[in-house]
Length: 452
Image (cartoon, rainbow, N blue to C red; front, top):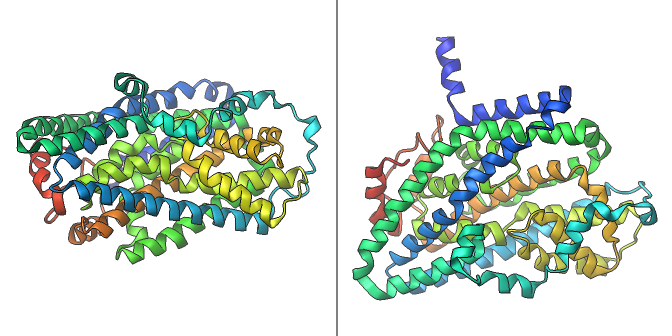
C-alpha cells in the first residue's frame, strides 16, 4: 500500500518538478562545477515551449474571436481586460512602493556610485535607450508576419491574429471549415505540449542547479533582506489583493492555487511564465472560462499585467536609491511610480525585460544612478522567481475576472474543477458540467481529440 502511494505521488508532475528543484539546489551547492554546466537543460525546456507559443496563441485567438457571434463582444472583452490590467498593475506598484519605504532594505549599505563597475550592465542600458513607449507601439506591427512567427514575437502575433479573426468573422459561415481546421491544429499543438511537459522536471533541475552554482547561497545571505522583502510583498499581494478579487468572483484563491500547482512549480524552477502558457490556456478553459476570453486575456496579460514585475520594479528602484543614499521626496517617488506605469508595459519580449524596464526608468529620472543595477545582478535570478510566480497567478486571476465580468465563466464548472483534491495535471482533467458561453461550440471536438 505504501509503495503504491509513493508510486502514485511520484507520477504527479508537480512532485517530479519539486524533486528536480531540490536536487538542483543540492547539486549546485555541493558540486558547483557540475551545476554551472547544466544551464542548457533549463534553456532547452524553455526553447521547446517557446517554439509552440506563437502557433498556439495564433490559433487560440483566431478560433475564439472568429466564433464570436458579435464582434462588439471582442472589443468589449479587450477593453475590460486593459482596464483590469491597469488597475492591478497600479495597485502592485503602490504596494511595492509602500513596503520598500517601510522596510528600507537598502539602508546602511552606503554604496559609492563612483566605485561601481558598470560594464556588466552595458547590455541592459543600451537596450533601455530603445525602450520608449513609441518604440513599444511601433513594435506591435511587424515588418513581416512570417518574421514575427519565426522570432516568437508575441504581441505582433496577437495583433495579426485579432485582425485575421475579425476578417473571418465578417466573412460569415463560409469560413467555418478553415476555423475548424485551425481548431484541430490547436488540439494537435496541445498534444505536443503534453509530450514536452515530460521534460519539465529536467528543465527545473538544470535551471536551479545552474543558478545556485553560479551565484551561490552566500549571495542570498548578502541580499537576504531585499529578497525577503520582495517575496513577502509578493505573497501579501497574492493573498490579500488577488484573494479579495477572487472572493469578489465567488471563488477560492487557495483552491485556484491548488488547481495550478503544476504550473506554479514549473515557473518556480524555470523562472519563466512562458514555460506554462500553453498549459494555462488549457486549464483556464477547462475551468469554465470561455475560449475567446482565455485566448485574448491570458496571452495579452503576459505584456500588460505583470503584477510581480511591477512590485519588483518599485522595490528595486527604491533599493538602489537607499543603498546609494539618494534622498527622494514624495513627489520624486510618485514620479518613479508614474514612469514605471509606462516602462513596465514596454518590456515584453526583451531579454532581461525587468532589467531593461528598470534601466529605462532610472535613465528617465536622472535621480537614481543607473550604475546601481550592478547591485542586483547577483540576485536577479532569485528575484525573478518571485515575480514570475506572481505574474502567473495574476494573469490567471485576470482571465477569471474578465470571464466573470462578461458572463462567460461557468461557475458550476469552475467550482467543480477547483474542488478537485486529486491530480490536476492537464492529462487528468475531464470536462465537468456545461461549458460557458461560446465554449459550448468547441468543447465536443476537444473531447473527441482526447486533449485534456
